[in-house]
Length: 107
Image (cartoon, rainbow, N blue to C red; front, side, top):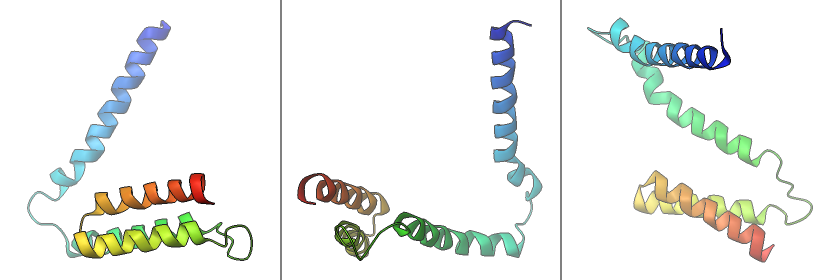
């Protein structure tokens, strides 16, 4: 088997498994979605966002260097923008740009 055929078969298998994983819940829960799945759909986004915030801020040192000021300012900007505009994309983009400007230009 040539390398091109092997690569093509590998891509087709990976694509097929990905499609199967994406459509399987719709096939399994065709009639009614179980209550635990609905509960997880409501709770998990908030839990994942909280976990991402903790992960992003885990190595921030508040006793040395910039004392965590760029991170704190950026997080506050994200929270204020999201509370005011209710647009996740704008909040995250503005927080990222703010953090990069603070790190590259000011601190």
